[in-house]
Length: 324
Image (tube, rainbow, N blue to C red; front, side):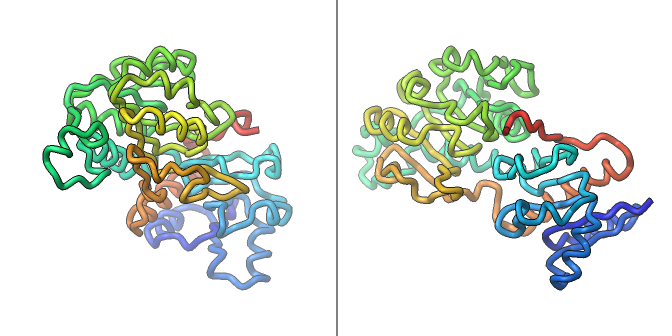
């Protein structure tokens, strides 16, 4: 039996070659005219998409009566319109596809903040004595990582192998994870925060993590803590962050992810965070804009689809209850 796969973007040639080894019919929507696109969607059993600006899933879902699987190219799925997707459609994310570049970016921000490079100061005495820029030691520090998935584990690995950090992990279950010296459930977060010299947030955004880090958690940070967020902006409460950073200049905070308002990630944010001298922001580029990274992520998504085509169990099945 032929399985029909529809991709909302053109796939890398390597991905096409991989699919040619299986009994599938592949349609890439950008290569098709409007009528042919509608025909492809009507036959689609597997949809591969970013499901962002390139494809409006809500308006097209009724055109896909045979749809059984959605495989995203993105790692996060908080942008998906879950209420519009029929319950019988299985959803798989691309979690882990961007772990290495995102973890590298997290450490780039950690080092920038730790060494005071986020605020240009050309006078050595001022640079060394200023609370905002005075260099802080990274080696043998305590690293707390929120989220022990692919990105979190890679952040922990770099810390452990590169800086001999003592790694504490936080996840929903408290289940042990590679590269972590100890792991605790989210319910123990307030106990762990005061122990950390460095906090890295690598959590997906869902109903369990939205607003997880608020004023109480931020005030629990030890003096001189460094915090970076490469998960999702709305895991941290924006106004609480601004208020605490404004009062506590000893905390240095960096983020690559921002807060969503009216369905759009706003850069710069609504609060004047970027004006604070202990804040560092990058415009959501940790995953890498390079073509090679995007292509590798797409190939990884195709590999997961092939597991489904073979009758195997795909990776990264999304639990709708986490989002609805």
